[in-house]
Image 1 (cartoon, rainbow, N blue to C red):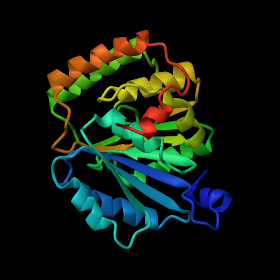
Image 2: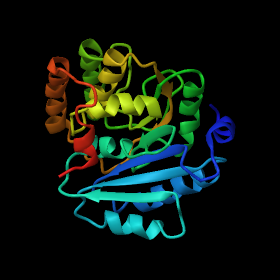
Image 3: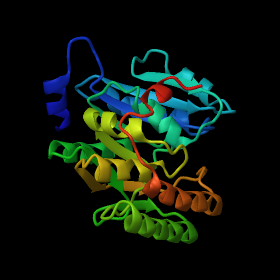
Image 4: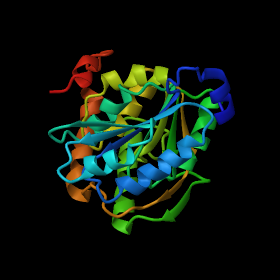
Amino acid sequence: MSNTTLGQNTADQTGTPVFSLVIPAYNEEARIGPALLRMREYLDQQPYPCEILVIDDGSTDDTCRVVQAVEPGSTLVRLHSYTPNRGKGYAVRYGMLRAQGERVLFADADLATPIEEMEHLMQALDNGADIAIGSRDMRGSHLDKRQSAVRELGGKLFNRVVRLLTVPGIHDTQCGFKLFTRSAVQQVFPRCQIDHFAFDVEMLFIATRLCELKTAEVPVRWAHQEGSKVRFLRDGLRMLRAVWQIRTTRYTPAAHTQAELHPR
């Protein structure tokens, strides 16, 4: 559905959100304010009810205070916060399972991919995909600012391993800009178990290999942002171990839904 179609076909008179944006945030006090204002301004212009769920993943800085300062006067923004820090995968899962929209996007707090790029992902769902994922490594993608050569090479090597062992055919599993139908959210995220940065691979493995959902990879604009929480060696090794874990795990439908909705 295009924006207009989404508004005409699914918006109701109660203002129930038909589009949800989930933003995981851990110690993002320096970036979350401007990014959230930009996202809110863009979604305010859409012809259908929207919501923004900021998931504070046990931040120890002023992330919550900054988000709360943006909230007044807006019905769009909702803050969810818990402690201790559980990891980005947990935060995304936590938010996706609470989103009310018929379409649910999760995006990084640094806006490395501009919010306007969601239009391209929306079009992919209009064309029949269940999931649309932003890609930095396809013809048509545009990198405004690249990562360092070491990080870029490491990412390419990791993606080759991932394609070989888990999700063949997907060029870029790690771009933090992915859109789901509500049905896809309900099928995929209750099964997910990985809490750290390898959650994207697990999610796509479950979606494509277990649920057989149609997944479209869409070229997007992207710019590297300083302040990434990913550490090349530490997290790279952890993610490679996670690939093996994903291949050897027996996933059961909806095994974790209640646990994730009611965290300790």
